[in-house]
Image (cartoon, rainbow, N blue to C red; front, top):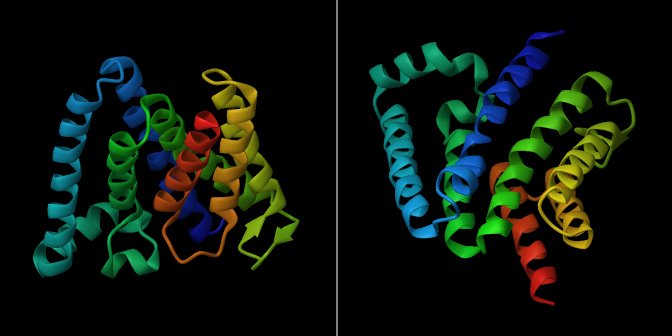
Length: 195
């Protein structure tokens, strides 16, 4: 395993730990939107303050990079990290979408994106689109999201949500996956639910 693969596996291990966000919303806060949104907004604000301090203050940036630099992608040394985009999209989902849809959309980001990397990086042989993604990773993303959603929601919405999450994950749209996946999958699941 090369250094890039090690970094990506480290990132995804950390990324998977954020499953605590949707699980807390459902099981700890009982889908209490106002209370959870308040605490998540406070946490998001704290994350943004840390990011701004890191980007503006050289000493703090060095300390931050010493602790987390191994997990950062090249562009993140001078921009917000994926973790910040994850908290921003999570607060958006909680505020905008119905609780069950928000729970699944955030979970899709964490489960689907993690599985896409964990399977796609070591086992992805069939490259798709720009060659950055693989069929194997995309299939893992879809199956992980679909099977997880089946526990909580009907098969049609689970299928649409999993397809949307996978499409967002492999798309070339210049937007962080941590924004694309939950917003796109959440919007389509909500639309199907309304129909």
